[in-house]
Image 1 (cartoon, rainbow, N blue to C red):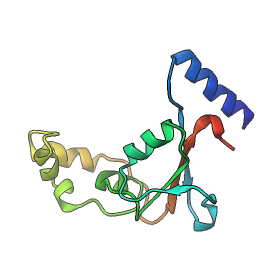
Image 2 (image 1 turned 45 degrees about the vertical axis):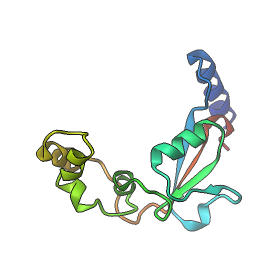
Image 3 (image 1 turned 180 degrees about the horizontal axis):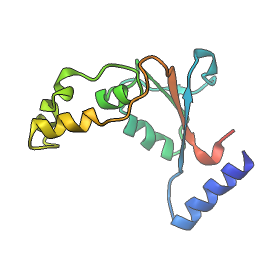
Image 4 (image 1 turned 180 degrees about the vertical axis):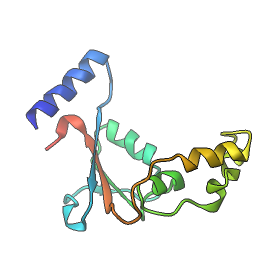
Length: 128
């Protein structure tokens, strides 16, 4: 792990980053969840990444994730019908046509439903 930690610091320095690289561990079983880690509630995956970039160790699971697309990608929840059809992306102004949004989600890689228990996000230089 020392190599990962030191390489994370080197990359951060070389790129002139003011925040940390992020490590993400897929926790398959409940007993893998580290103790004393902040469990997020009502957060999008990108928000969890932002917290972690600034030093937080966080846990995101099916109850805590609020982004329906990320929840579907990680196998926490089914993709809502409005996103499956592409209609939701038109409503958000992300695409102009429903068929484009539908195609985006049809091509999205996802983990099998229920396989993942949680995501543990941590600053990479603290990897253990």
